[in-house]
Length: 401
Ligand SMILES: [Ca+2]
Image (tube, rainbow, N blue to C red; front, side, top):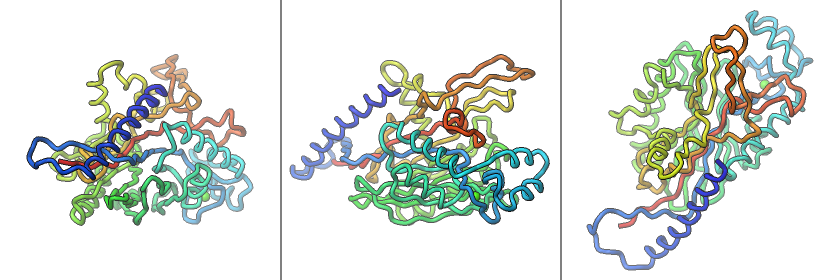
């Protein structure tokens, strides 16, 4: 994996170097005659690394009024005992057991920073799933070396939100942000965060950060959110047809979902602003790759689901989608498909043993993300996160005749 990443970065640096030459040549040399064949693609110097990371229940250590955060508080937090006892019986034991302290939160944030550091290089932006609020987003950003973080304030009952932390370097400039309530009439879910950036050429990038309803909700709930996102994208595209769009996050969609929130939602072939999925595009690229298939060096998904011992399934819950214009870079930004990576550093990996009584009793699955234990007292036994993060590179691009 590391070798592949290193190699791809060497190739990437070479291509940046050669494209710098092409870029300066096109600035000074006379323009070639028009209609002399296909357009030649020219990539400019900047490349922005984007990361999706479900940080698994990153809660602070104080009560957020109106949110069910009682499980994630210090044991002696005023009102906690009474609040836990009001929960349904099956949730009470969990709520009463955890002693979530500042020391443990610091340990968790150190681990988040270490996972980010294990990536191909320092990301320009990180989409965060499962953060409690703006305060925790700010603390994770500070710990991980990011200059700014923006978090949503969703009606989600569990009190978890999404966020985007970023660094305004390499020509990337923040323009504005907004958040969209996409909850259904009965089921509340996480808002979608929208953050707009611009580059030195004035091209626009809008990033939508998602955390769609979990598998505990029917596929219809995810499709409903997908269609709401599609409507917002239509509005942005109508206002600026040159806009580059990225949809990133934990989409909670599995292959068996029917209706299919991707195919009938944000990837509907009949929809004019349909998005591409970086994971699927990478699969196509890997199939045609000459040499060892690079997919073999990646885990089969970002999340392993055992259903309490009844299933053995890898899912790609975390995704990066992008607009059609980013296939060629015709609006100044291009998704670099070969840069895609599911990050599975050795230190994050553990195994799952199917328990006695399970139909798969005795089976062991290795190489799965070691989930974080909020109960563990030390870093050695607390695990990491239950999702592997993913990466993709967006490059500045320019088409010349
Ligand atoms: Ca809290």
